[in-house]
Length: 253
Image 1 (spheres, rainbow, N blue to C red):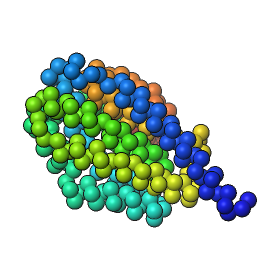
Image 2: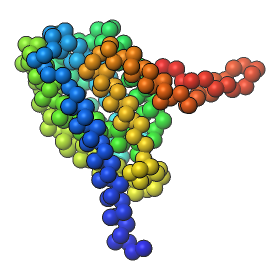
Image 3: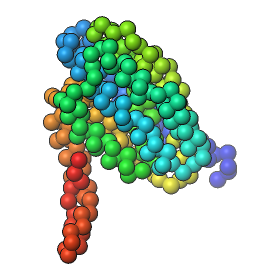
Image 4: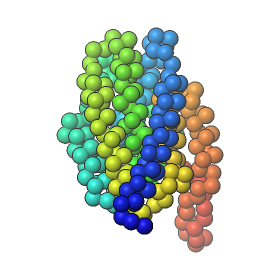
């Protein structure tokens, strides 16, 4: 096979992966309730649960991606993203967004996303570079299009603090494209399955369920927990018991 045919072979899986991710994004956005049909408490809850998830976890997710990838190109693009997150203090930015909307997370808000957030953390901890990059490309692609909705929720709550939504509605367009380029670079190494049919979208599904919990709160928490149990039923973690060797039990949150 000539060297000129290799790039075309690699481009096709990326395009198909992106198409599948876009379909999930479209479905999720289409499921969003109309902002003017939500009560003030429902609007507050969405902002608060979003804050509970993003404020303390996005940098962790991206750090996991950096630890997982092997290609210099992928590492470079992820470091740029992390540098921006830390330099501009995006966790502080989102807290400033939530406060004027009266949407600092409560214990109830935290518990509503606890199980699906735990599942996402455990997924990142497996450090599967291709799967994490697909998942983060999905999230960046979703967030840029979710920002107008989030801003409208805050405005209806009486807030005028829109730095977070303004910044992420623009910068995440670039971040999404960069993550797909990072994915392409990582897949070229051939360390993991690279066909669109063979690549696992497990992380996308976990993150989709987490986003669903953000939107619907406690009504989705039990359903998400059941789905997570089914998805992880076959996955066991060894637990060492003194004198009895290692026994397999389901991973606990």
